[in-house]
Image (cartoon, rainbow, N blue to C red; front, side, top):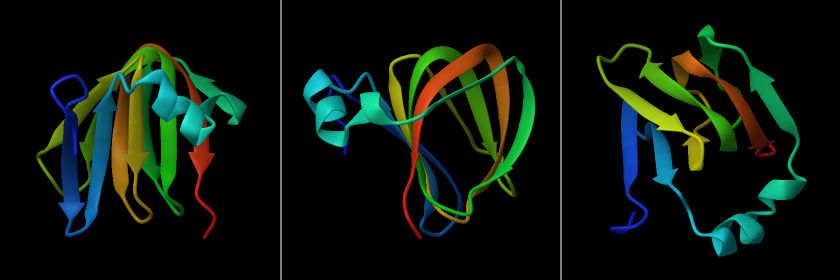
Length: 109
């Protein structure tokens, strides 16, 4: 779970399927995960429906996103400096307010 300096927020669309946001994780955590060796991806502002066929962990270098979970009224906001986990099977729509640049890693199935 989060700490005072690293709060964690979640939004769910089914039991066990939730978006987890770790705000400004410490550099040691990023090094442990090997974030800087992950591929990079970016997108301009817009709306993007997504379905995750594998769990995705990403670390945002730039940008601001509101992810609305399909079948739910809940949404979660995340942006530059956040570490975000999307579980396998989750469907959501990214409303990218500020263009995104991120490192990402899909977990092997």
